[in-house]
Length: 291
Ligand code: NDP
Image (cartoon, rainbow, N blue to C red; front, side, top):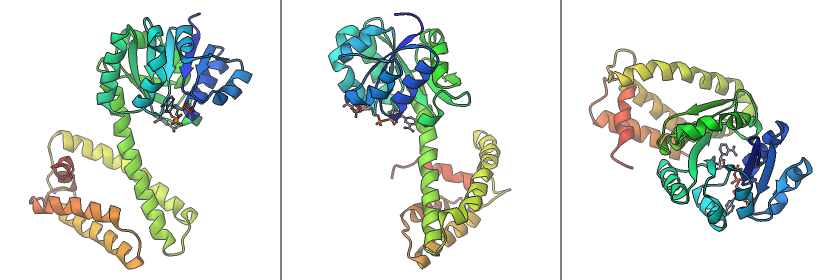
């Protein structure tokens, strides 16, 4: 195997985009997927479909994994354990930091190096200069394979040796993504109850989303300094606002699970005596106790 050669295991939308990006850059690409037919388009473009996963792993030192989660990684690699020694596994499957650390140990026990990756773009972003991914694990392996990793995403960010760190950064992005998108669905549901289409509220939704980075930056400094004084905003004001949101949904007969959960968090902050403090004091309510 040459240095510009890679194995990609897992050909979902992500793995296919990754294998495709390597082909576009002239890499020798060996692929394997549980459902072999997903490799057809890549084979037509010059990829080699390994007859089994063991031979896919054996084909190259660099093995990129793009599977649903870490359970799928073990399921896929189980029959290839004998071929793992000496391989660098770049695991771009998403899962928890704890599972990433366990997988690094699992790989090490089999003589392989495990680099955890967290890709922050959808398949359409793979191969783009503006896309980015987090990595963690042995820096030496990351540096050695950096040119190949930069085929996948133009920007790469090695967070440290702890294999859990890249998974953590990925999950930090995901909690923001999923809760924000649910906020968007909620807004669309409220609009819909009043005969408005998603397109009708799009400019307003986009403008609202664009206002958030300013708030992130403003509060980051204060939060890190432990400053939650009510000099710029007061939790009691926010409490009234989120109750208006909840009541607007109730009046329209729209589901209130999400706005009610928001009111509940504000209520806990109020009960803890933060009425006159900043809304950032809610961090305490968010942190726990659980549920
Ligand atoms: P998919 O879930 O569509 O891809 C799944 C791949 O895993 C397929 O190749 C599938 O094989 C394989 N697989 C699942 N279970 C098993 C198993 N038990 N044994 C063997 N193979 C298995 O995911 P994506 O391609 O969309 O994404 C891959 C990873 O990238 C995921 O962890 C995802 O969270 C992450 N990611 C995805 C993004 C996206 O927008 N799609 C964005 C950022 C990260 P088969 O074809 O046979 O079913």
